[in-house]
Image (cartoon, rainbow, N blue to C red; front, side, top):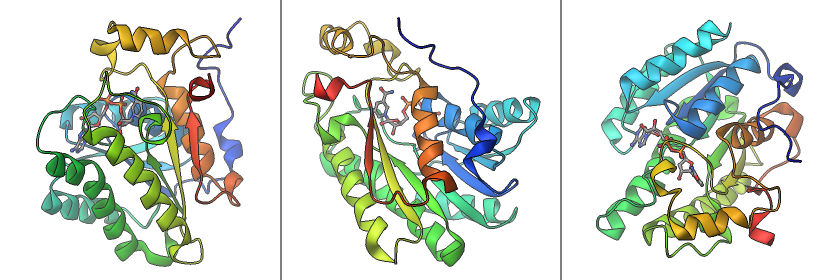
Length: 256
Ligand SMILES: NC(=O)c1ccc[n+]([C@@H]2O[C@H](COP(=O)([O-])OP(=O)(O)OC[C@H]3O[C@@H](n4cnc5c(N)ncnc54)[C@H](O)[C@@H]3O)[C@@H](O)[C@H]2O)c1
């Protein structure tokens, strides 16, 4: 029998200093939202970044109703000026020690290849560069959200060409970050398999998707919390000697 997807773990044991700040991008929904909620349970104060303002406010409200600390920042991370403004707004609350780059365009988005790569990969670079400019030596760790589409899984039937290209780019960028400055901040990536989020829901009925789902060795699709747990671990002081890895969180599907 499969394990339950969302048991209650002791996130405080991850070793974060209570009240330190983390930015989670795309935190109004899906993986980003689950990550924001777990980060708050682990004691971090969460800057909930999303282009969906009401959604970001809802995540921040859920964090505070669960006894945590969080605030919403409405920002389109594909827009340079908005990212600069969002950092100013966020850093007014204090130094940001942690970053989770999660927001990205959906795999089915259509448009010129170069434009989509700039949105998916370029936006992550801009968010990260400004973080490093502002927080420098105090930046402790970041986790970038890649995908098995960029590391292992053929996905020509379900995604646009830019998507695996950008996710592969994210893994390369993460490795570059991990070694650029004596391993400070630590930089790791998580490569989720199919994860049941609002974004993926309309695609679950596709034959290619159903075929993939039946091949997951643990016997179920991923839940946002499955990804969030891995993100929080890699971000945390408990993972202080892990730097430059790209961790598949896919129930083993890429080996099947
Ligand atoms: N769901 C999956 O199966 C899966 C698998 C592998 C990787 N991923 C990756 O995980 C990440 C999150 O995906 P999800 O499935 O949770 O999606 P989701 O649609 O449930 O949530 C994405 C969130 O990001 C926000 N967002 C999108 N573009 C933004 C922008 N330009 N600026 C600010 N916010 C923005 C959206 O408003 C939304 O709240 C993405 O990078 C995706 O590529 C997802």
